[in-house]
Length: 282
Ligand SMILES: [Zn+2]
Image (tube, rainbow, N blue to C red; front, side):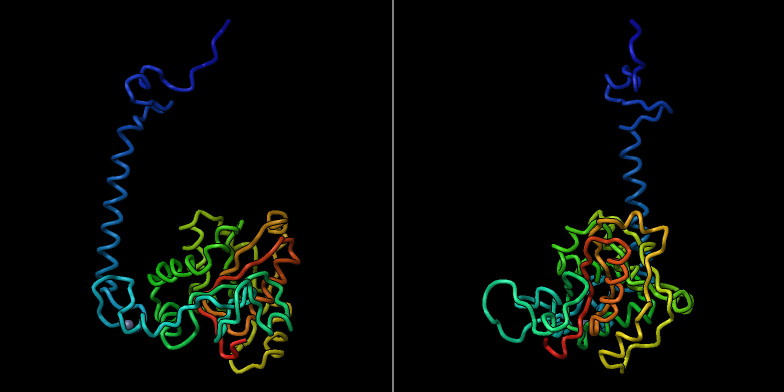
């Protein structure tokens, strides 16, 4: 009886030199590859240090380590910790007891998304960090902000089937050259081995700035703003989406985007932002 063809060269395997059909010695290639990758990483870090000398991600003052906050900014950053609303992720000023708590706002106007989480309250330090990422082209900050977001939304990231950024309209993307939400979403997906799928959602309406608009006006402004492209509907079916943005002001944008994703076939949508406006303390 004819033996099935050997998948690899047994003589090589016997000596620990596993040969692929192309003849590459993987045992030898692996350290070379790692060495090359380390060299690239060191070179990239050195280049980044030249371009961006170590500075505080909040105030821009000198720091010993790159991508760190200085002690003054750390103490002023209002990290969101328990107790917070289990739906909106907004902090409560007083601890109302044990168990999952839901804010009056989440009860009065239940959001389309299931859970929202954020790293910090959108106050001075968080605002500066977002501003530096968004308008000062400090794209290197995306990695450190994404790490903080992963910690704040561990559960959401772990349970997500795919990570989707809140998209910009193509005109705004052309003007700004990059979407800060996409940088954050891509970093989170990459670190945590989740699928990054920006093609699941598009912004089809160039909405005017939400600044200064009332809550109903914000919702009206976003009416019909988002859409799941036809081509993405099949792969979105039954998936739990983690929607990522830099800031959530009233939750109107996240809500409109979540509604579009659910209409497009998503099973559930969670929202992860770097900062959340908690002025009303819901
Ligand atoms: Zn600082």
